[in-house]
Image 1 (cartoon, rainbow, N blue to C red):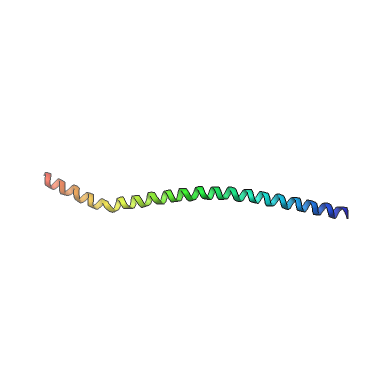
Image 2: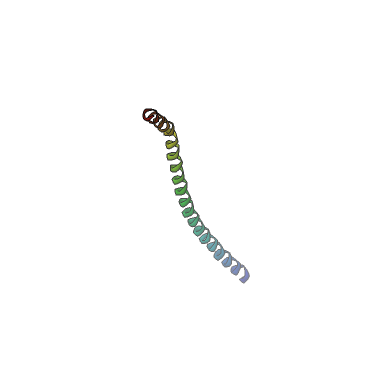
Length: 72
């Protein structure tokens, strides 16, 4: 009977330890996920700005050619 009680106590203590460990690991993963999300958003903003710059490039090239024609 004594061994059953010891086994139950050990099981409960182990369960508490696992729950606390999982809680800590989950908190760390959430922090890492938030940091990664911020980096991805920053990258996406950079890509959007680059795309907008590339859209305006033909206009700038046309303006340069027009100015070259007027100067020459």
